[in-house]
Image 1: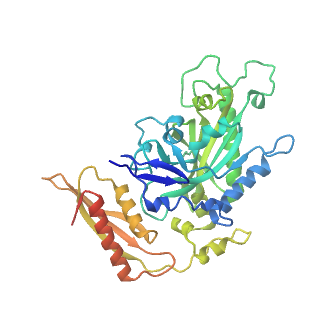
Image 2: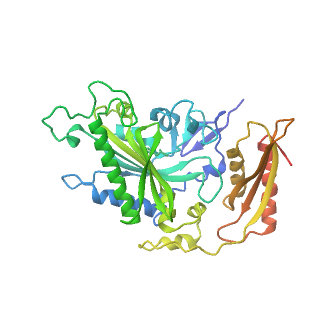
Image 3: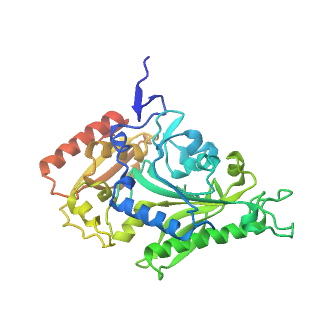
Amino acid sequence: ASAIDLELFGTVYRTDKMTNIGSSIISKLSKKLHLQKNHPLEKVKSKIVDHFHGNYRSRHGGCIFASIDNLNPIVSVDQNFDGLLVPKDHVSRSKIDNYYINTDYVLRSHTTAHERDLIKSGWNAFLNTGDCYRRDEIDRTHYPVFHQTEGVRIFEQHEIFQDSLDDSLRLIEKNPTKRTFEKQELITLDATKFLEFNLKYTLSKLVEHLFGQDVEMRWVDAYFPFTHPSWELEVKFNDEWIEMLGCGILEQKILQSSGAPDKVGWAFGLGLERFAMRLYDIPDIRLFWSEDERFLGQFRSSNDQKFKPFSKYPPSYKDISFWANSDFSANDLFEIVRGVSGDVIEEMTLLDQFTHPKTQKQSFCYRITYRAMDRTLFDSEVNMLQEEIRNQVQKQLKVELR
Ligand code: PHE
């Protein structure tokens, strides 16, 4: 049997049973919205980088944070998961949620995938921005490609406990303690508290810089395999708390495996779309992919005007119903729908689901909202797309259309 080869950025990958990337995702790999001058994602990225460059300088006046934004989104499973201590059976690895090139390579699902390499290459502080990929539902805030900026800062003994005469102030425990909710085995409580304070201070300053002094924030305990303790930062917009980023104190095992066993550090990862949607009032995540001048043109000026939506075009609704087996995954359905329709579907919602008492088969009914952002869709076009979606769903998923 001849396996099909995939050539991406000049490298040939052999496909296998894990491969689940198709042409619609491959076509996004070269877009690099965060590098397009004056694109709103690029503007937010630059604001973040400028804030760190302006506020964190060494004694000699140089920038402390390096800024990186052009690393290849194709990473090894080790870079994206194993090396970051993601458990072998953790749900975040599943084929349902990720785009695998084959068993060994995956499109990064977060910029954390590069953390160990960047620490190994010697950086003590950096910001790393890139396009990330996750299979996801279809609505105004989810899109299979999104952009993250990762921040990392690591410290040496003398930076935290300035040549303290008192030998009791150390970063690393002489004897590992028990892990508790407030500390890891190897990092002292003193160092942990310093890192927590420094991390939260750094991120609050960033959020105030972006949203103004009066912005309301709160810290919520969280879990990530690569940090402990971990937090999410929530920001209040229109009386609603919105999760804006994840962060925490780097697992010491990661620093050990990155050639920095005597240092300690923190990391955060934030989604640029979330920040840009709030900063500019952008109502639909698909707009970031629009090449319409009525969108891009509004971001050319150097000030931060809110986005003025162009008029909304009328939606049209179509339902699709089918019987499915127990291995059905909704993300597979969404992927097929996105592949056929591109960006003209605004939302797909589950209307109805039940299990047949005798056959145990499951019945699903989804409502598809068709609405382009830049034009009115003709009925004939919607009907054709719906017909093609039905064909492809029947062909690619083992379902029985109703
Ligand atoms: N990688 C995490 C995510 O994508 C965010 C994160 C980065 C959390 C760094 C902690 C530290 O959700």
